[in-house]
Length: 243
Image (cartoon, rainbow, N blue to C red; front, side, top):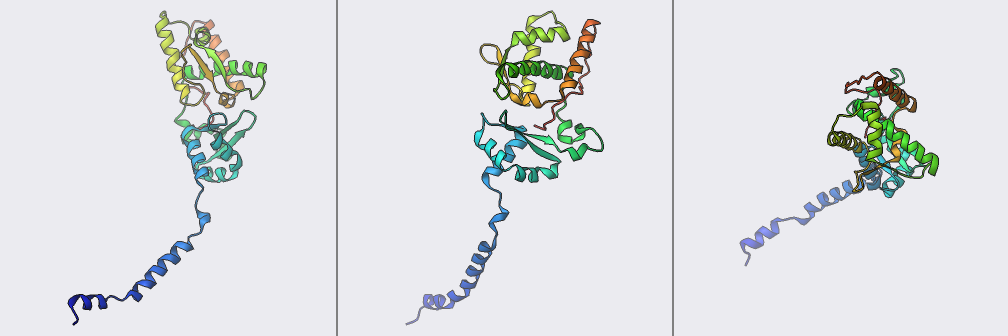
């Protein structure tokens, strides 16, 4: 005897569901795998946009990906008017503004990502001082020798030459540590360690222009000799990587 359940079961036609299943399978198979960016390339680009650089000694796998896939990364960065630069001697991969952006204007600081990272006069001064220490380090140990260390006392004595003393050692220490903390965000220096030393990272060799930094130091020497100090927060010496 046929029941209500028999009639309901008979009403279902399995053959009708098959075409939909087959169509879905065809759609999945039709998606070309070449449209997907590899995970390693994504990770390298995301880290570059987040930090502005990759260091071989800190993130070797991502640095290796950037080294091998430089053309692919440049293609991803091109719409942003950015490109990848490699310093294989020092083990650095970092982002810079593409030359074609400022070729006519002659000013790479017009890029919106770079304008947001303008350094103050005192920060630029500290970059110039740190760069001098790093140049001496490479002259003695060789290019690509890695990071250099300097004590806070050494940096303090240099800042006093250009900025003078506030009259309070505690205030001078605080001023220096605030400046170092700001530069740490650009990947230039490390945290201050327990021995009151800071590590200068190799990326500093690619910051600003050596001649511009020297002109800045000479200008501040002249101001210090005349007993003057310019507190203008803007500086013409900024880093070139939109980190």
